[in-house]
Image 1 (cartoon, rainbow, N blue to C red):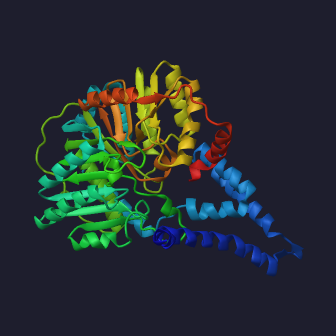
Image 2 (cartoon, rainbow, N blue to C red):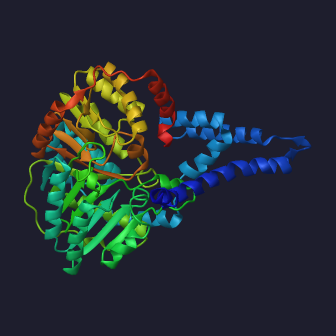
Image 3 (cartoon, rainbow, N blue to C red):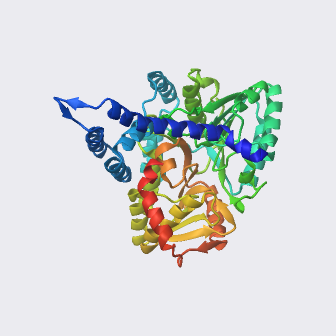
Length: 515
């Protein structure tokens, strides 16, 4: 009974109830007005249904002529033609994002501050052209779209498991001398987080500046609402990203899905791991949790620092000189090339950067293309690129979980297998549990690792981060890990989905770009 009341009166439950009430009132009130105050024009009664149908068609014309992806346009066509009032309401409250002018203006100021630290000289560009060869264009795309440079003087270490990531992270946090900046989608009370927190509290007492930014919706049923204030009592500067209030707004659809730690401007961690026990297998609700990460040591950490400060400053509406945090010393020469990059909603970034980076690497694959992703819910562009790669003889393999964390998402993921397999793509499921790693390895030469799932939420709605690497020694470690995963995974070549489930998934997939 105590657990029941805890769920009923939780913050998440109250928020859901408040939003349902708002949607209900928004639908009922217009019909009540029409009932008691009918609309007449030149003594002709005009049903409110007709008015909303016309408005729905006009909105649909606008959407079709926008740069929204085809799958999104199809979703809106269905809902606006079938339920015009509901469709109009959802569009203006959940999709048509107009951030406050002060945020937009502040963002421009922060972006201009960042530009001066990411300038690429002509000599640097010529060196990249010569050394990156056919992959130069992929790194140049990121630079032109985000301003994030490519660095050669950076060592990259592949962390093949959450437990290894945890040990490396703790070791580097203990060594921090100036600052520790942490940005994570989820933080959850447990052994992993409390181990980190104990170290952070000690570092604060040593004079190290510690900042933590976490996503409010990502932690809404995992942390108390005043968690940020509790951390501030320890001297930790803590920010809730995009605080979730029970008022319908499209801004709430854009969550901070990044997982980064930056230490003294010299060491950085990017991974699929959140700061919770299941990510390091201290608890196993979905079998063995397989995740991966990268430890960067060198100048490329500067891009991670700037990404963090950019979002942190905009969220807090404050401005500071970034030069105070950029490491001014020299770094040892590294082998290979590294480019950390960020992505986010269209009002913050101007392109679908994460998807385009994936498309670029898929389209250039010649020998093999190996992918791990916890969710496989992709649009026609990615589906076409993957099937084309397989048809031209590329060994395309994708590993997804065998034990799901969300059963309905698992069903939709499996519904994507059939079309890909017909073209020759090989699908595997990680038999021991849940694979949460988001990575791509291509031709022994180039790879991506980060927070970006192969699904609509990561590719369209969330703030994300990743690292594009070329010719770095750690690619050999990543390849060995892939080969091990193939040996402990199930080949799904004979998989057949239940027809009823397949029909359900087909219907749901119409609306996945909106979810």
